[in-house]
Structures are given as C-alpha cells and as structure tokens.
Length: 208
Image (cartoon, rainbow, N blue to C red; front, side, top):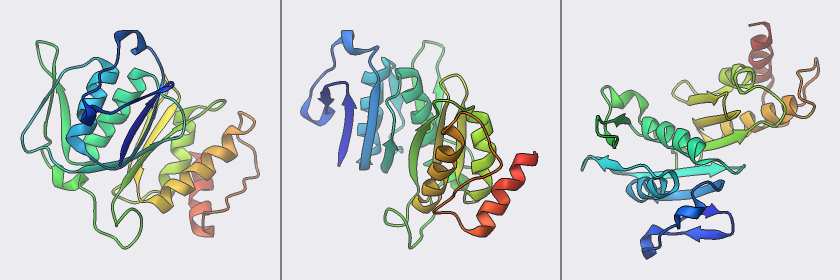
C-alpha cells in the first residue's frame, strides 16, 4: 500500500499520473506501508524535481509515516535516510543527477528480523517540532533507540527522521510531545510508553 498526499491531490506513479510543476512548492505528507522502494524513488523524483539513476540491485519495500507535511527539501532528507537504512546511498553526479547505489558496509544498516513491528522490520517516521530544537530532541530520543536505529535531526526544517522498530518510534513521539508542548524543557516529563530504564537513560541525556 503506497500513498503520498500532495495538498488536495493524490499522486500515484503506478497509474502514470504526473504532478504539474505549479505544485512543486507544495508541502507533502508521506504514508507508505510496505511500498516498493523503486516506486518510492520515482515518487520522490517527481516531488523534488531531481533525477535518480537507480542501480539494478536496489530492491525492497519501505514503510514510512510522516505526521506533518514536509517541503520538497525535507522529503529529500527523508528519502536519503530511508535509502541509508536499507543499505543504499545517494550520490550526486557531476551532471546533477543523483545515483542510488549500494553503500559500502551496507550490511550494518540493513533491517534485522524481529517478532515486533511491521513484520519484524524497521520503519521510518518523521516528527516535526513546532517550538523546540530538533537537535535537543534528538539527544533525548537517542538513548531509547535500538542500537541499529538511525536518527537524523534537520535543524533547518526542525524535523527529526527516525528509523527504528515501531515500539521505539512510539517512545520518540512521547519525548517530542513532552518537550514540544511549551517550547521548552521542564523538570517533569510524562512518558506513557517508555519503561523506567528508558526514561532514566533519557533524562541522563539532559545533562549532556
């Protein structure tokens, strides 16, 4: 199941639809459940206006959830993070295209099999802060993540891209919700989905 919501229109490359250039500056909300990774690359190409040269070995499915609308630049940041967790890298060529190919040491970033989450696979979510700094939030989220999870804080757009198991994504949402409510960190947090040990590790991060 694959969907990218673009303002009031839904773009589906599988149907051969094309987005008019006038929509290029619109914000986008991404929701994908086990979507074909190559179809995802094609969608990102239309949203961002970038041309991708895809290695034939790039295969697989992706699960992504964006709770907030993203600019084309933020969509590209999400795209690069998703490629990395699947063992691929995005390289700009001298002629301006972007080559999507295998990343050296890609096995270190490949999803692990587990009994939890979306059929035991990592998923990617995007959290957008309204009042707080993404880098500060990232410091609090990092201690509750899986050792193979990936976190990227985009300070410019104030978004956090997280790739991890669903239970850890829920913890990350709780942390962001707690610190972003009033635009400041306080001495008291309420974490409904975080264990005492995880909360302790998170609070340690407050001290640097």
